[in-house]
Image 1 (tube, helix red, strand yellow):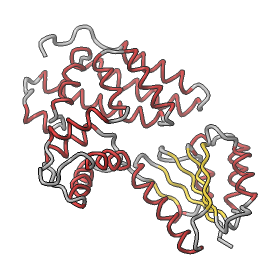
Image 2: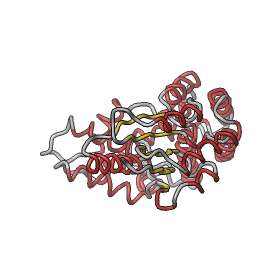
Image 3: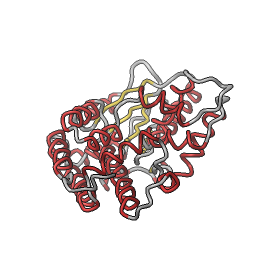
Length: 329
């Protein structure tokens, strides 16, 4: 009979977290000679009592089970924390439980119940590591990629290795190994095929298109994208906008300076040029303060009115656009 184990995996780096979960799957398969029976739950949608009931019941058909509980940060009620904490103290023998959250931590009592060696925070990769990751990915696949093309990929794709892996894999389906990958080639394929993200949402904010912005927001929420991940992506984008506006005011808007702040692709430059028509430095700072407010309110108010709050805050971001920015940008 498999020994019951409980893990806690938190943080925004989805790709490395998925790799860690896959290693656990492989270890269980190797140890017990068959793939584990697997189930996934969203703690924001399934009652903790129902999840614990599944955990306690064991399996009739497999020697080992793997249970994933996502959005674990939403487990906050005292009775839910105590119920799940009691399970973690005495886990089912044939079951491996993994609590998952895009946030850095979950309820402190639940964190304390899990052994230190079975907890890990998957931090966002530093810029140099992401550059190395993309370059190594294409090298392993037999492609040569130019530095500007790597920068363009990092501008167009969400800030985690899972999204990078998906988009880079899709690129390899279209490209010729005999031709070095350039920034123009990346834009040609990725810009027209990528899925919605916090960055495509920023594009609509930059263009001032409220209707399309709300549509993308709900596409992301319907796809179970966490509000915190959306906020993080928009915060990153508006910080870049602040850097861009600083260059405008310093009259240093040139290719070299744009490349230094990570805006080398024509598409990214277009987005920030459009955003600069609507947001001044002051209004950009107000947006960043609003995004911080989003994060606090969403964490404190739970999931029940999450979608409504996101609508309100997104419309507020549109309302903060300045009508008196530099018209000559």
